[in-house]
Length: 318
Image (cartoon, rainbow, N blue to C red; front, side, top):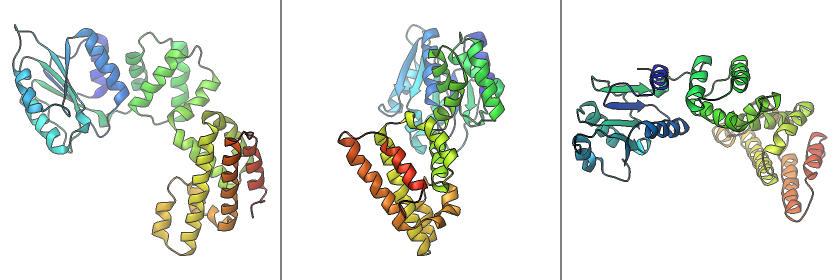
């Protein structure tokens, strides 16, 4: 069964399909989704938890095979993603043959996809594609009473921009929507920061090194309030330090090491913009950032960032 069909069935019927084993399988574990899912299961069924990392699973097999006065229990195998391949496969083998009186739910990461049987259901989380319909479905699961006036602008925004987002990112958006009063342009623009913090920083750095002044200042105006001054000092310090190292390695024709050192630097710098700079210029800029750190820790004003950008763009560090 695919994820969308499973979730639609669960939402509509307020119950799980008539199976004894539910194996969720995938490369990454959507922790926000499963936190909500297990919370819903607890509201509808008697649920017990087995920590497959802290507890020996073999010792718990007897619990899964017997019941007290015929009572059926739902078991959640906690921390399945933390198991190594051998232990995960052992649990999969057991569950594929399980015919006990209880219902077992787990998320496991194994190289081979488990096989469904008469009493078991396998839901492949890697196949989840968050399109417009799936987005609305997940939102309905996470926030059943969410006002359409909040939801519709977000769905339209993500669809129009053709953003590729994960299951947990949808769950994260739902949490923000649950506490906001209205969804306006400010919230929609903020989604980029929520969903793609690294991308936003990457774009800012790209404008910085390419000296696209108008683009940089527009991005800086949006990004600067998101993080504290200490973060920005660390961010620019690392960017300049890595840029210096890349130029040095390029000049030495040590391209393999340069590629490693270029981690977190924008592609435009790696490909061409590095030729616009000298190590001395970037070292001077780095020294200025170091001085800013000292000033801010001793009561200095945050306008020193504006001074830094002005000096950098005007070539005063050369």
